[in-house]
Length: 411
Image (tube, rainbow, N blue to C red):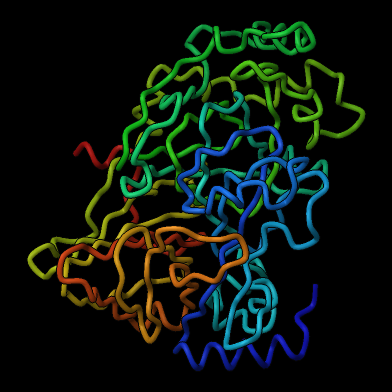
């Protein structure tokens, strides 16, 4: 999609007016096979705003130029919109028009797009054990692979849902033949794949890094998920929470000639990584302060970090500004931002964390901060005298020179 001349001109005006910061509208995404956890602050009357046949809204996407690959989807489903005065245009159009200014010359020259996105993922119960394909596997269907990160924001987890545990990988000793047998039993009820998996209790304020080809069955905490800009998956569990899973969700991102090739499907799994006896040590995250700044009235923590196959694909930080405090934050790259608590000002734009949102309503809790603004430094001001201003911001690939590695929190 080429940016229209009007979107290009309006994008430049919005950038100038916001001094490099754009205001974004909420982007809601339904999933027909899941049950909403009701912690997105979306009004309960609007949980099925796309129609009951589309399923409930259980995701909100942030600074997304990636379409949601749902059946029967809306043409712009998953895409974030910039709102400026009385005009709206997609963030994708803005990036196409002002790429080097918005995402930085290096990222623009490499990808010619904003190649990542993040979301709140909110379900009442667990979802099925599944994986996201690698680049090599996804390329066979014209797509890209998808690593992702998890962080469980305390402000959005007032209750833990029905199953606050996530199955990650497989038990050491689980074999390819075991999982192939599960796939063969797909239409016989529960295919038993969780007999070979290990669950970990989820804790607000912590997270995980999940490379492609790792089986995982996310639990019922609301999750902040920075990830690569792709929506590929392969579901490996045939029955979850008493609900059958269509086999099409196993094969939707698999070449048609491989849909019934159980050997091919089993080999979507990275066997050494899934059966790693030190899985938690190699994937679990706890916050790490960027610097010792608490005495200055703010704390900036790494919450999603670490390399995927030796590459920095994405990252995220949580900034807490104490009541009445002000700080200047300089980052090496552009970022998408969501406010999770409090109110104040970021740059020239007022921000506020809403209590309840109607579908289609504009909010003041989401921004896209351009490379130009981020590298120059952005002022964060907390206008409350009683509560902190808390924001999450996520970054694209190859931004940081000082990003921690998985496990550094324990040092």
